[in-house]
Image 1 (cartoon, rainbow, N blue to C red):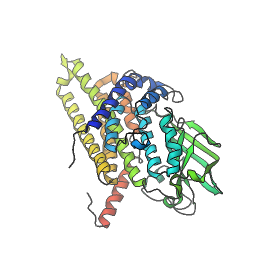
Image 2 (spheres, rainbow, N blue to C red):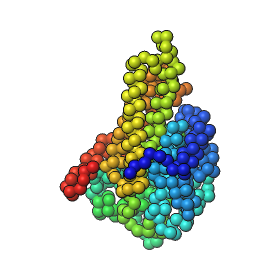
Image 3 (cartoon, rainbow, N blue to C red):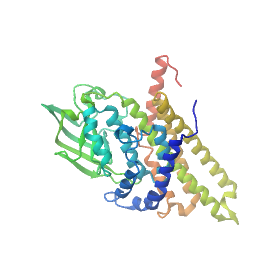
Image 4 (cartoon, one colour):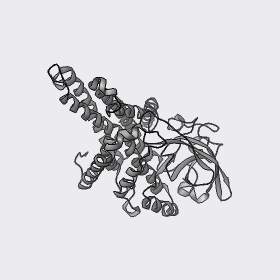
Length: 403
């Protein structure tokens, strides 16, 4: 049975995240948003969050974390993203990539890399899949045949793999000390069968950072090009110790959708709260505008969208935590929450009137950040819908329950 009450541990972590967000993130969020993307990475926030265990919390206790499950992570993202989605995503990206390391890594890999990640308060992680000519090819909707799809080549040469090519739009790209990189190890077969993942420290010879992407939203969370020029990776740094797709990939795809939806709903809640506050304080026609029926109707619509999105997110996170990950449900959650957040943030900005577009108020930032999430995690909205449809078709053909 789905429970909506939080455990004591979840309440403690929720309070930890809320206090940190209010104290450290919220006061600087607008300033970070307005800075040059090459200079805006919030190292002080990362260090302070690391001291509280925020960067490593997804790891099991035996590896230095608290073993926060997906539902707990979603609850914490809601508090952190409420203050600023960019700063929150820096931490949650570390949760996601560290999960790859401890779920898929060999004992030797975990012993060599996880302690350094835990002990260094500036150790940020990244995951590199997307390439300049390969976006939707990575979405899982179809399997690109030989000669198509991912082009970053990993060629076996004795005890090493030599990587050549480029990635782009890579989160934490300019700042990460370690990447999990997906590359082609067998170009003669389809992408799903011909790719493997590698652990790549950022100080590896031949590896460099290219252009840092300048986004109109989500600005303090940096994305960049990664360039590989004869980068030699020891065979022992092939993630999991073997070539080919990893067993936890299906699970991790639902993680991405849940994580993305958690961020969007955190922003939606912040925008909605700002709209309600403004509507109670702004006087027009001799009374606060919240007493005008048009404003009440708008706020009611935004409230419905907010509650529906948060409930769907909670159910999806609970299902992936305590039951079997459901790709169609996770996709539905991503699509609905992204659209709901767009509606809520734009509706909030409209209630603010002319001041809503001013850079010294956060409501315009909520809108810009929300629009980024229509294209984040798992592909565009249309691509995610295609994946949902494909899953439903497959279930029906196999005689499985569609829902």
